[in-house]
Length: 352
Image (spheres, rainbow, N blue to C red):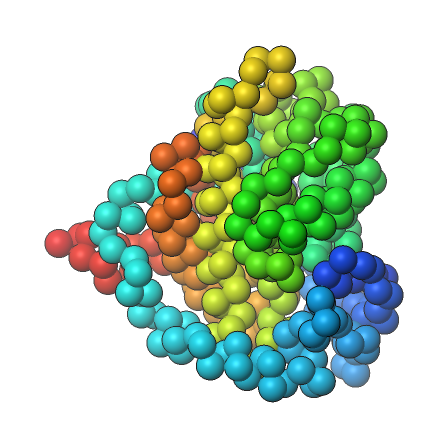
């Protein structure tokens, strides 16, 4: 059963660089947020002050990324391919009752007023547990505000060299962009240089790096709270400010959800066939946060964010590696994951 934790405060902060395809570019985005009160399974609702925002144009492999004024034509073309009905409650036609049965889900209980679902358990009920971190697409680092900041604390207390995750994720991003849809592995020298990992793997949805999911397998003795807490699953969600419509934003969330299931299944298949000397264990359960559910969602309802993540995860069941997928445990966020799941079951006829 999921445990809970009291909320901590946070204020201020800034982003100083951005990942653009295969390179870094400085930006001038700064937050004026103060008084962030909690992470409750989602990104922090950190505000942007009046008159502030990113001023640099973002480019990726020769074309601007979504949402800048200089790429409105490209964004409009992208949005035209998205069914707007999906963003307002209609289940994608590709999903069916069979896909519901392939996804193994459990729901974290309400931790109580003033508390939230924790990142890891002090006494996990499985022998190999992973937890989703809502990572930064700008830096690919562990740390900062919100859930990413909580992971920084948890991993630091476990003895992990937290600052070194950024380099591992940057290498994985480049490798994954060259092979979209495939699980790639960090080179042995990169893992060894980190000093706290057994291995690291990643997958992206496209060559621009969207839907980035990295699975960092932590060394025994350097795991937070318990030896069974074996992995951090670092997911980079979309930012609504980079999209012209809610529809395109939610579609990218679906792509992330699908890629997340694909990556977890792919890793488990690899770990199951790896020699014992590799030190890799299949993940039995992964705790899922509401990635892109706070400030990154803008005015998009959390319900639609949760639903889009679930729709993507269901879409991921079409991949052959689904048979090797772990159980997914959904963090408690005002019960919206459960409500969204019940809606999907009803629309697909699973409750009849």
